[in-house]
Length: 464
Image (cartoon, rainbow, N blue to C red; front, side, top):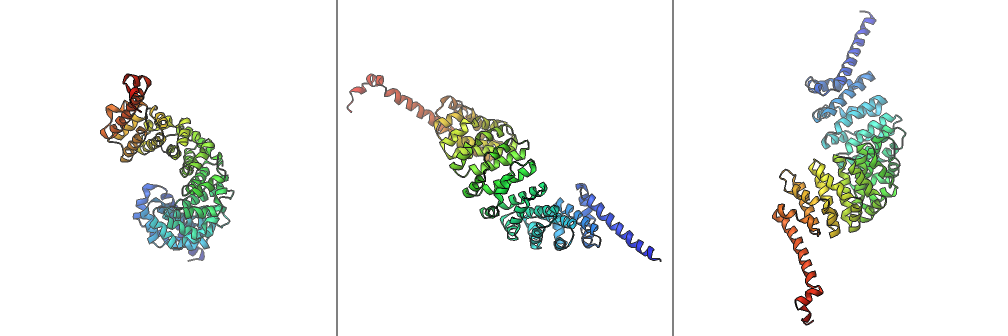
């Protein structure tokens, strides 16, 4: 056999391996093929190809494994049990940029499913290797590494701490300053995932100087980047007054209010969420938002949205109103009550109705004037109906009942109370009757103590 014939055997073998991994990678993009591939033992066939002498075969086999692991936790578990992760971690340090991206994709696909699988990624030393990739010259490698680190961090505080301890945060902050928009998005998303679990983790992100850079990107023309930036600032703000104040000091108002009018519904939702997280902490922060025109802007956003996009804005109005009479009156003056009443009637999801009921209760609980503003919007019969409806969720029934009680205890507007006399069950009726008795007794006393009444009843002759 000639030398050429011998080499042809190897060439055919290489072509066969190449065709195999490319075909498997393509088949793995379609869910209907996954079970068949798994039953055919695809994992054990792909594993040795990660060590193939041909770089494209290595990269494509890693891509195929990533697509399989991404599909469900069983396949991700198979990657872990197949002892594939250590090889991927080794390759992150040794191989070219194409392989690094594919290897980071596999690690991300495994980590996303559960804390246990993410812990397996940590245990094999992948986090340190991924952090090194954040310093790679290639933006695609940085993006793939940031994405994988974010998927590890999102599960719980312990996994986030592992990412922090590996030194990821300062490098992620550098990544959000890179010119590539895709890299900015993923880095901002990873910072959001790191910040959400505890004040300490959020403080680590803040200490790395993230807030100023995130705040500068609020008006980015890229909607997906704005989503992630607003999410990261929300996750930082939610933990404490100090952290919320640091976000506010980055001069996000009134700039962030423009995002409430964004065509992208997730930008609107995340913007309202950020405003909600800031407003809930103190009356002073709520007042700052009111002064910036935030309440009116959120009410407009609620009116122009539907479903879960409305939810953070609805809750924000409740948080603002809960702080004080003046802030609740600011919500009323901005016409927040009619908008909440619309949510109570229009929305199909019980958790959104429950949030609207809670917010209306916070507005109406302060004084008779506040209660009247809520009552004249015809909210009381609707709250009663939701409370009595057996198909309402337990949470909705509880919140509707509490809101009714809060409003009724202050309500002195008799026309709004009268319809409840016929339909209310005893536990609600007692509050309605209580208000009637107080009002009627008050009127009787006023009548009895008038000068005419004194004379008619001979009260003028009583000793002092």
